[in-house]
Length: 250
Image (cartoon, rainbow, N blue to C red):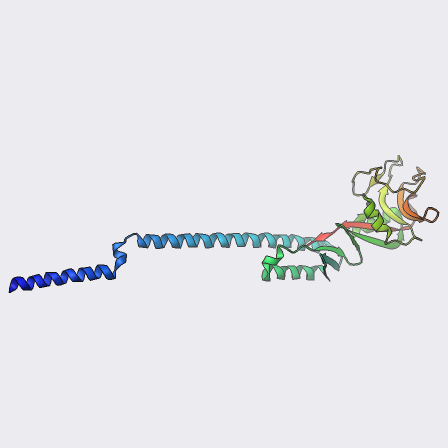
């Protein structure tokens, strides 16, 4: 009888061991925790990379806005008019900057598509530049100083399209100083922004320039030819003037 009882006990212990193995399969696979740890580390790495990438994009956009804010603060103009395709936005420089910063924080995905080109209010926009028509009559030096005070310079013209655009906005009964002069009286014409003077891209009236004592240039309209053109004049004459500056990009 004792042998039979011992056999039953041994058999029961064997069944218990088998049940423990069946109900705890992880113990039979010691590599399972390592697999979980590896998956966790991979997921953590991906999240870190995603966060770092998003942070870098945010930092670049934010840095760009800070640079634009510095530029805006340096402007003497209190109002800007900005355009993006068929959209317009206007207001004070600081309010425009605040609007852009809100876009960065609330809609960062849209900021990459945002590109506004701005001109000071009351300036004319053409291509990548802004133009101001000053109706105050000054001599040439005073006219250039007035443009410089607005972070601009007297008008420099390099293309016919630009010249034609300017003509459309002028009074045919007035004359306007531009940024071309001959300071040494040697017929060595120079633009105020130091860009090369090209005789192949000039718009002189017929017979001009015709006086070595006239070292400055103005735009005027001649009724005889029914055309706008350049005319050399004495620099102390008092005329209206045209200023030009690069557009401000936000």
